[in-house]
Picture 1: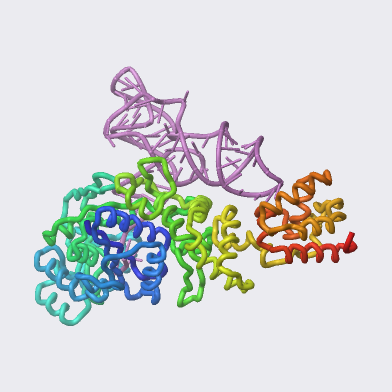
Picture 2: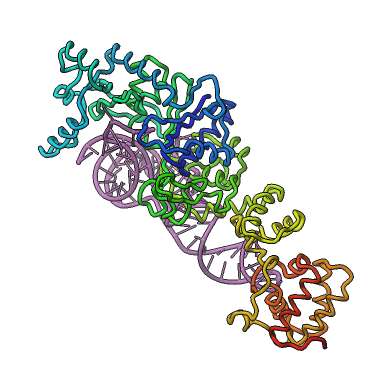
Length: 507
RNA sequence: GCCCCGUUCGUCUAGCCCGGUCUAGGACACCUCUCUUUCAAGGAGGAAACAGGGGUUCGAAUCCCCUACGGGGUACCA
């Protein structure tokens, strides 16, 4: 099995593209096949610098790797279509020789004028097809000498000669048999006047030359598949299998997810942050939001595919094992950011600390927080991961560690302080000072014993202490917090509180 | 407009190919309870769907047709 992912470098890859790449990758790995990256940069007007690098970086981050591609080389190089220009021109001319294509000389303006004319006449949209081509300027209508003359002196395109009266049927691995009548199809341009091929030609030629056996792409290509089928026939090449993936839809149901949606939807549509080189506009990415690549991959896999068993949590290895085209659904899937976060949370809780450490360390540095040892950071992560879905939440959850409470406490919080506990603060301090070792279980035992002896309400005591030590009313276990803070810091925070609240020191 | 694809809880989906086992299963989100010093997490439970209409059949979410709705395509863009 040979599959390929063939993005166009017109900007950052969006999340739907990542899913298409993922499905191709999973299949290639499952069947021990080859996976090719091909850059379809045939539209020079839409080329965006940095896009190719972005695509590779994004997929690498996701753990999607290629066997062949512009970045790794391979037996079918080059892998950028702009560098294969001559190949396509040759095949296009061959099609003309074999009677499957023809030269057309109509200018942009002439075509536009024709469209207007047809529209004005109240007819349906103009199509360059079996009937209209006879009224246009092309090698079918012009005398041979004039064609020769024009070929030498002016720009031209090569158009596919769509056969008349044929039903084109093909089997889609996801949808079953699909058929189109050639009557509905037009004479698509195969080779543009700048000598570059259009998608249709380049795609078919390259898939053939690169030995691609399965074309797995988005559903937006379904309507042009009959043209591709006919191209394989015209060249006399064996056809690959086709599978058209359901589209990723916007959560509000307003069409397919597109690059232009940027952050408008309230969540990123790109895997990595992207800064547009022309407009300077920035779009956020899943990586920067604090997603784990395994979380993104896992969620994306589930959008349009369902395993045989009712399971939702997968590693890449498990996806490779479980994935199959037969279980890909036909209908478009709406993107659900909440669920994406939940999946990420599950991976966050399962990830080995060593995987989390570097990224949390980086965030820690970026925020300019005081340096901590890896050991301490690991413990903080352990404490925080139970209540976080995204990486930055890990740091929010241990704010107590790097930030002393703002005193005096703000009103809704201050009300929750228990006067009785405050009065006894010196006793609590003394209790902690006499402790043999500063560890959570011992702290817990000591405090509980004291609270019991004093006959105080446990909940009130702990909440008050939590407010004094962290300035927050919710968070990780208070004993763990105290242990991490250390005896000195705990004592200092208690004393500072007493100073601010005017409680006399000493008993 | 025309062509193509699709349509099960709010969302992702199982079931559909090979009709009865479906009083339609799971998950996210939501609600209740529980655990707990708190927030989470966990546990238990709840509410929530076969787009509509015709067929076929003893029997249809499952097969056929129509309609509606959604999506895609209709470029010298991919």
